[in-house]
Image (cartoon, rainbow, N blue to C red):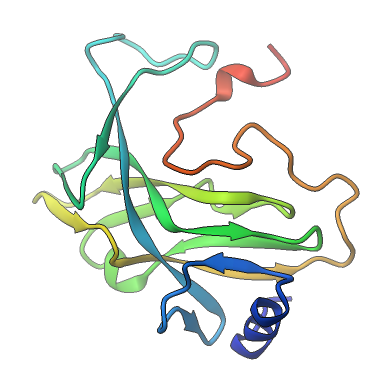
Amino acid sequence: MILSDATLRQMLDSGELSVSPLADNGIQPASIDCRLGDHFLIVDETESDVITLDQAIHYKEVTSDSIIIPPHQFLLATTLETIKLPADLSAFVEGRSSIGRIGLFIQNAGWVDAGFEGKITLELYNANSLPIRLEAGRRICQLVFCKMDRSAEKPYLGKYQGQTKAVGSRIFLDEEL
């Protein structure tokens, strides 16, 4: 079940759900808007000629109030907000319609597990033929919250728990290796 604005307000007021700092206009009818933070990661193409799943990827780190994404380029960003989900609530990260209409694709693997705490790393891709300039503090995505049928037996404690800025892929830490 997707949660309404009234339910989200109740959960925020009770402390069951935390989204901080929450913008005054952040709560939408069925979601909470998140803003762009000021930390970005760009794959450092000078460090490797191929990305593999079993080795760490090297990134260039950028902290700035704005960034330009060239056409057909990818980078990682973070939300301004830190979230904390209870064990019975998960969330989808969705791009805002107005952002998608300029050709900016936003993702974070699309899912935030129950029990996650931290800022959300966003994968941004400029599908446009023109550069896109982004500014920290602007609304960029939305969280759609889903109530689970019961609390997770094992809430999220994975390799991205507690992140405070954009975090690159840690797939090389996966257990199957």
